[in-house]
Image 1 (cartoon, rainbow, N blue to C red):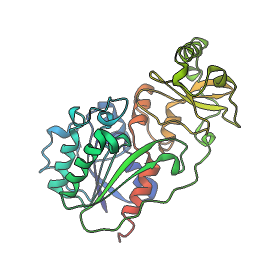
Image 2 (image 1 turned 90 degrees about the vertical axis):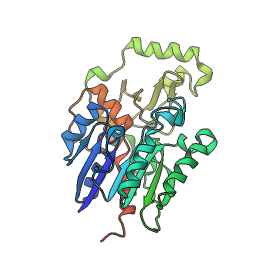
Image 3 (image 1 turned 30 degrees about the vertical axis):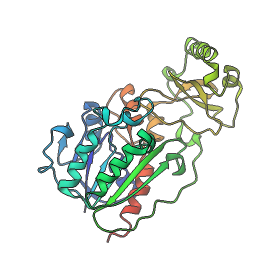
Length: 317
């Protein structure tokens, strides 16, 4: 049976991916400093060991696993996080996961981060990371993949780094046809998710003030029509409203929730956000809506992880 260990475990996208693939596995450890992520994870999966803080863990005593997965914090390398890189305490957490790989030498590892990591500090940060991993005598592959290319209509680009403890050939998974956005949305939702006139006017005023920063005016916001879902957009403090011409959900984040117009204007629900990250409706939701939005925004996409894991394990007996 495959053993898996994860750091920065969030709500368990790798474990969910293994379930989706029908692969029997045993979680030997998981780790996340966020107490709400811990609640969600333990409500949905069993693990032999839970660690709250990777920086306080003795890696010599942390269990070995066949497959190690870590979506190490991206804020230090993202636009929203001001791209401080290794000068941000969250950026140096990479060295903690590096220690685990060095000491326990899992058969495979998969690391994930924002696309901005590749070009951060003119590529020097990514070179440091790759040199560090290759220095552990792993065969390394890396590529930027987008969630929208694996069946789910979300524009979410992430860099994935795959490592093998032996000399190994690896091919990245083939892309899939993107499902229509309607498949992930409910026709009827609670009225609390609909925007009030005051909220709509607030967006209107913001866009009038910052019109040069956006692709569409408020008139476009109201009149842009497509079949089924009329439009989907994201509202961010630094950009105002951005309507998506391709009816693709914007990248889910911890700080903003996409809005749609389907007869009326509303936010996506927490369940819809989880679906757009590949989680099934059976996923146990045991925390508040605000925490689920955050957890969905932090998570890896299950379908992308499943596609990668399938390729990693394809030559296994």
